Amino acid sequence: MDKASVIGSLMGVFCCVLVGYMASHGHWAMFYSEKGMIMVFGGTISVIFMAMPMERIKQVPGYFKRFFFDKGVKPATVITLIGQLAEKARRDGILSLEADIAKIDDAFLSSGLKMAVDGNAPETIESTLRMEVMAMQDRHKAGKKFFDLIKLYAPGYGLVATLIGQVGMFGGLANAEIGHLGHMLAVAVVATMYGTILANAVAGPIGDKLSLRSGEEILGREMMLQGILSIQAGDNPRATTDKMLAFIPQPSRAALKIAA
Image (cartoon, rainbow, N blue to C red; front, side, top):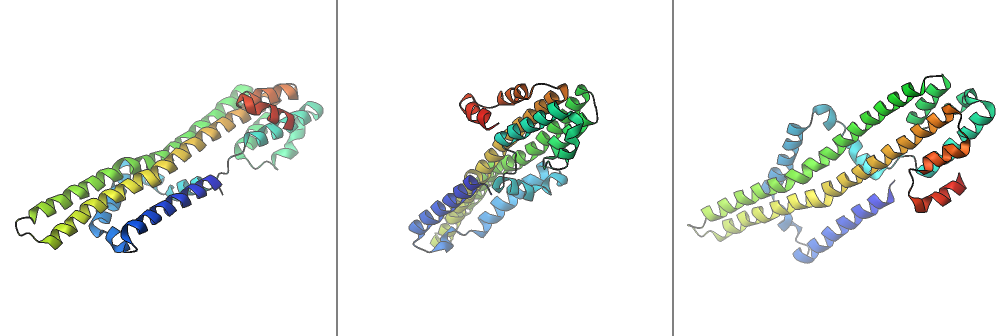
């Protein structure tokens, strides 16, 4: 469970509920608009179906799961593990790593090490693993695209509902039906609120978090790739560690180097 995602989500809900209560004094019905919900939520869903293929839409639950759960391997873990494998390969030969491959949870790392143990050429290993990274990056882009669509079009449909509400309000001016005018004005304002909250309090932050995690995972994969190639080349374990430390910000390298 990603604590930052949970804390941020709870804080956002708390702020909205608190301000809503202060504004309505507990009369929550004033924030409900059936027409606004149909327009904003229904319209946004329609855009998602128009813009994304069905196989990507089926993966939507996984996008939310990835927001709350970060299963990526941390750089310190990668450096420590690759360093240990490099030590063993240098001491006992690369074939000795075969028993360790089954114990590695990360499919990318275990696949690359298996190719190295099987004696594949470095160029083959690199090209194969880079294709895996490209495929992973494409999947991550789909997740970011999903939330970008919500962020872009939810406020737009909120504006459409606002305009519809205003048309209904102006249309009732001739009869001066205050109740009708107030109802249509509520539709206009509440629909805009729905779109704004959906875009700025939900879709925007989640999409940005997924984008950040995608970059971190790609960096981790590149670290693993360089480590695998270094082990296959028979480099000194210290040199292997130094190659991976090149991906880490300078202030963090000293602690990671000591841990490795």
